[in-house]
Image 1 (spheres, rainbow, N blue to C red):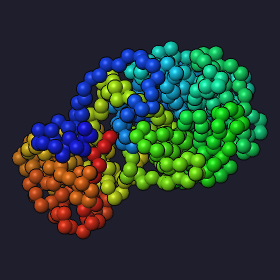
Image 2 (spheres, one colour):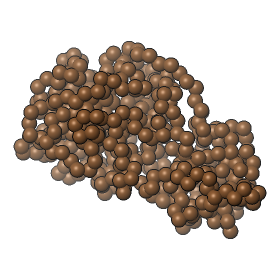
Image 3 (cartoon, one colour):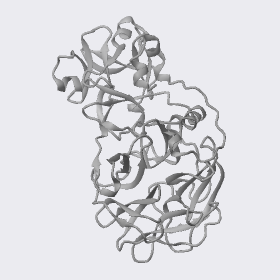
Image 4 (cartoon, rainbow, N blue to C red):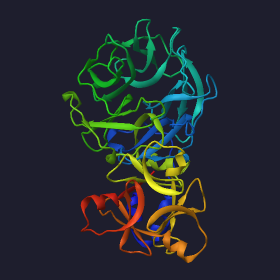
Amino acid sequence: MSLRHRLLAASTALATAAVGALVAVSLTASPAAAADDYSAYVMGYFKESPNASGDSYALHLAVSRDGLDWMPLNQNDPVATPTEGMGGLRDPYLLRKQDGTFVALATDLKGRVFNLDNQYIHVWDSTNLTSFTGYRRVKLHSMATHSWAPEAFWVPSRNQYAVIYSAYNGTRDVFMVNYTTDFVDMGTPEVFFDPGFSVLDGDVLVDGSTFYLSYKNLSDSNLYVARSTTGAPNSFTTISGGLRQGDAIEAPVLVKSNTSSTVWLWGDSFAPANAVVYGWQTTNVDGGSWSAMNQRAFTPPINAKHVTITPITSAEHDALVDRWGAPSWNRLKSSNYPDRYVRHAGNLARIDPFPMDPTADQQWRVVPGLADSAGVSFESVNFPGRYLRHSAYNLRLDPNDGTSIFRADATFYPTAGLGDSSWTSFRSYNYPDRYIRHSGYALRIDVLSPSSPATARQDATFDITY
């Protein structure tokens, strides 16, 4: 059951929903699950924020039931950190191997100064992503160039894994490939994809006997999708037009839905430290037509960069949550401005665009209502003991002074969203005809009802997410 549904359930559940307690499920190594068994997804990523205060050049994990709304694990802190090379990573990749276990690959980089001459990548083994073992750096080539954004896929005709990565061939950036069976002996590098212009960030989705390659064209800064029936080097033909959202785009990843014919293409902003994820979808990759997705439809983890997404089973999902833990905080996403989240700034509450610093300004502990445990109150993560409360109808972040007036002002009842019943609105405890809404991006409580103008009802509707 989602957090949103729990908050809209019985009053007892309202008091505990934000904690997100989950049932522990044990998990051991198993053969590769059939696609029919996959009912969830795991994401890997590193983190960057605009002023670098939220940067983390390590492996982070998140999980999702639907591939759209993501819950970061381990409080959005790392689950594995490199100890060799540059001591950090970018561009992680998670691959389920043929025996059902996983391997994690990553670029050997730390920070925002790029090493253009590094022949190594980071590698970990993992039975089920609840722990990471066998850490090593492996050498891919002896060229005077980099080994960026390593990704891998199984090639049945060779009975080997292909590891592809970005490198400079002396003329332009191309994709190289090494073939391996154990991610220790990496074999001999060869050119995998060289379309005659520089490319970056290759990702291969294997769908039956068809191989789809997404990549960034550095000549026009757009994303493209190519196709091959063999997955062999230099066998891919581009089948899509250029795709871009925002000012710039990179890091494409193709993901097939577990439950439908939908295929998603994710990418993130190329702007320095602008951790905005964008999405497209299609039900016919070969047709080459992709529809841009509204950010209302999905919510990535805070500050996630260069994501990798892998389907998992329900048991694996629950084992990951049991091992790493669900967040102790939430975010509130605006319905009609889905790139904006509720945050405090100068002790005032407002909705601001993501990303933002400090990161914790947008994180809230949703606790039982201070005046009525059937409602909720919002405690600041980075200013514990301070809560959102209304004063002269405006929402502020103030310290709890212990008075009954404060407790009443800081208590709200979650209801079905006035603008979308699958989202949430928050009705004031002591002004029951008023709801939290944004106006000029500032938060206040206003008189609203299901018959209020549509724009006002959307202003008062939020997604309770992470």
